[in-house]
Image (cartoon, rainbow, N blue to C red):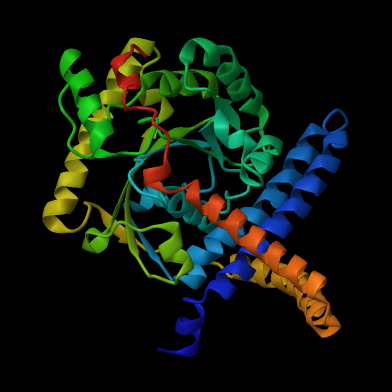
Length: 376
C-alpha cells in the first residue's frame, strides 16, 4: 500500500477534510449573508457572486470524487447533445438509486461549467441542514414539503423567479421523489398496477406534478430536458464513505436530450410523456445489466484542476492555524485545555458523520413507503 493509499484510510485525515469543508462552508455562508444587501440594488450581481461562492463549497465534494477517489465518469450520448452542455438552461431528470448519484451529477456540472448555478427541487427538510441547506437558500433553490396542495404556490413562485437567471443553470428533478428501496418499489408498483401503468423494474413510479409544473413555469427559459440514467460498473453500490476512503468507482451515464417544444403543453399529456420516459429508462437499465454499457457514443470529459486548487487553497488557509493551535494546546501541558480540545475534535467528528449520514440510503426518509398509496 502506497503512502497516499494509506492516508486515504486514516480517520484523522478524514477529520481534517471534514474540518476544511465545515469551516470553509461556515465562512462562505457568512459572506453569502452579507451579499443579501445587494439583492434590492443589483439582483444579478448577487446571483453571480453566490454562484461562485457555492462553487467554492460544492467543488470540495467534487474534488473528493474526481481527485481523491479518482472515480471515472463516462457519458453515453451523441456529439450534438454534448456540444450543448453548459451552453443552455436545462432540466435534468436523474434516477435516484445511489448515495452518490447527486455527486456524479455535480461532477458533470463542474466539467461543463454550471456547478455553481446548478439547481434542484429539494425536500424542505434539507433547508435546515447546516452548510447544504443554508447555501441552497442563498442560491434560490426551490424547496417543497412534498405535499402538493401546500407546495403548489411555493414551487410555482420559486420556478418563475428563475426566469431571468443570468448564468446557465441545470435544474435537477428526482421525479421518483425519493431514493429507490425494495420496500418503496413494492408499494410504488402496487400504485402503478392500480392506475393501469406498466411495471418498472429499476425505478419507482415517477411523480408527475413537479415535472409538469417545472416544464410549464420554465418554458421560454429552459431549452431542453436532459434525461440522465446512471449506473455503476461491476454492479457496485458506492457510498460517500467509500469515496472518503478513496475507493474508485466507474460511473456510466446515458444522456438523452429532448427539446422542450417536444414535451406536450397539456398537463395530462406531459405526465404521460414522463411515464413513457421512465419506461424507456427502465429499458436502458435492463440493457446495461445485460451488456454492461448504455447505447450511444462514449465521452469522457476531462476533469478540471479548479476543484483541487480550490480545496488546497482552503486547506492551506485553515489547517495552518489549526496545527499551530493544536501544538500550543499540547505544549501548554494543561489537562483542561487538552481535554477541551479533544472534546472539540470528538464533536467535529460527530458533526461530519452526521453530514455524511444525510446521503445514506438506509437513513433516508420514509417518504414513498406509504405516500404512493395517496393520490398525487
